[in-house]
Length: 139
Image (cartoon, rainbow, N blue to C red):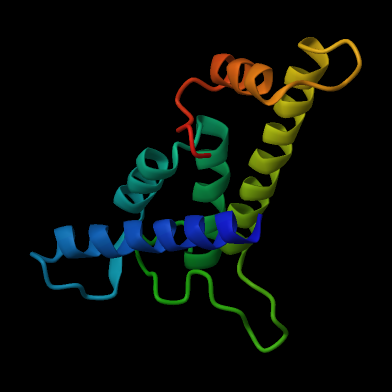
């Protein structure tokens, strides 16, 4: 989970940076429009409507709902008590929920394709491909 979380955080930060570059003619200013950032996060990280609503609300809680633009340099920063802002916490909570859902799916695959709770590797891969056809083979 840790490595997935770190990668998704990097991807999220990259979304902010890329939006910043697009909005400032290739010269990053350290800030970007919330709406463009959220669209980029949705597209890159394949977030659903509910997840995006939660992230939008969390971003507004951190930067104010009236502000259209935000400085993203401290989006995932910790304070001196090692706490993070509402956006960072909501984002990380979603990663954990996604992982838990994936584990539930795997358990369901095993249960529905096995009599004794065990599957051969080939049967498991076949069942997994049916359940998640977009997943690359090495994963």
